[in-house]
Image 1: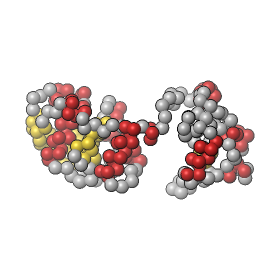
Image 2 (image 1 turned 30 degrees about the horizontal axis):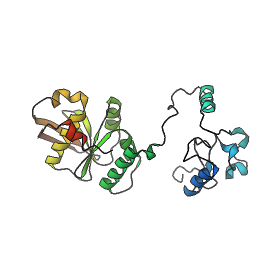
Image 3 (image 1 turned 135 degrees about the vertical axis):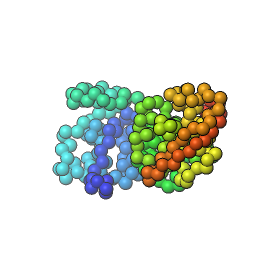
Amino acid sequence: MYEVQADLVFTGEVLGQRPKSQRNRKVLELIELESGLKDRLLRPLSAKLLPPTLYERIGLLDRSKFLAIKGRSRKVQLLLASNYRFRDYSPPAGGCILTSKEFGAKFKEMRKVKGESLDQVDWFILRNGKMLKLDDILVIVPRDRSESSNLESTYLRWGFKVYLQERFLGIILTKDLPSHEMISKAVSLLISFRDNFKEVREQEALQNLEITLRSPRGNIIDFRLKAEPISREEAHSLVIN
């Protein structure tokens, strides 16, 4: 808020919509208090059922324009989306990704390797790939073409983007340059999970591979290495979940 000079935060929370984080007024008030946003956290969809925020009380926000939605039904929200001609929105299912055990495990492993707070790019990577732990490095494998495009185009602040003959494989997350042996293992893992590298994977030995690592500073490191084929069972045993 300080960075963007904001005075107030608003969310899409609805009173009684979720059984834990939105169960009742007391829970929503606790979130407001614990987040440090006392009097500055607005829930427009349920505002008329909640105490007015500071900016409503002093007249900067028109409380009459807010709603009084309550409960688990999404009928009102879907009607609003239709009225405003919103077409591209997620279906009303699932929950906050931060409550996912798999996501939490990946988050903890990334914190261990990075050794400091995660930034916006780190969160983006966590949401766009399968994570494997290989000793003291993390290997991020795109699960489909969309994730591959997202990961390749993101501005990587640490670690290395890995290419096989100029074809993007995935990302190695490590604070230091990994050893030649570790790169070989990481490449084997990346190839074993990438469907579009089937012709490479079917070779008995992955020899003389042209591997390129690209660092955040723009450094390009070229290797020629041999990667031992790895079984799906062994690869899956290294997946963080």
